[in-house]
Image 1 (cartoon, rainbow, N blue to C red):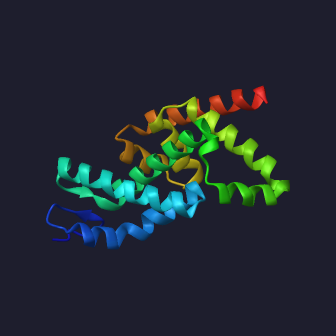
Image 2: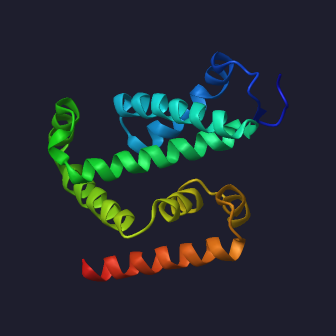
Image 3: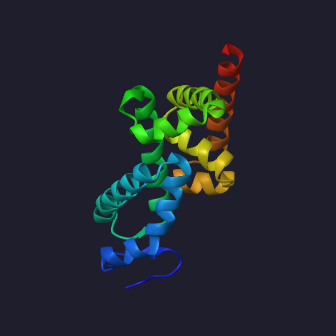
Length: 170
């Protein structure tokens, strides 16, 4: 039974949900991870976690929940990759080496972002990505995070402060 406006319930089949929201989740993962293989893996993990949430909560806003799960999973994968760069897939490394002019700036940027995200909680990192990268409003983020707008603003202010401290170190 569809409830409209992105709502789903336990009577919806997993196949319907996957078919409807799979492309959105995949695009989100591709945008953050910039790797087709990692994006597909993250998309599958997103739907596994979605089933867990759906089973616990019953009725959920499927699109919002899937988007948030995908973002968190991708951020965690980026953090994990920063901790063990030797595990990267070889063909991607070769492509980066072939494009040597951009390699150094990519590595510097990736290290900077990883360090910045490691200074913040997972939820704060998600808020920063949602606000600065996705263009979500403070109100939208507050609703998703179940915080007040001032709480979101405070976390983003601290994130900005951490960013300035990190820039001064460099």
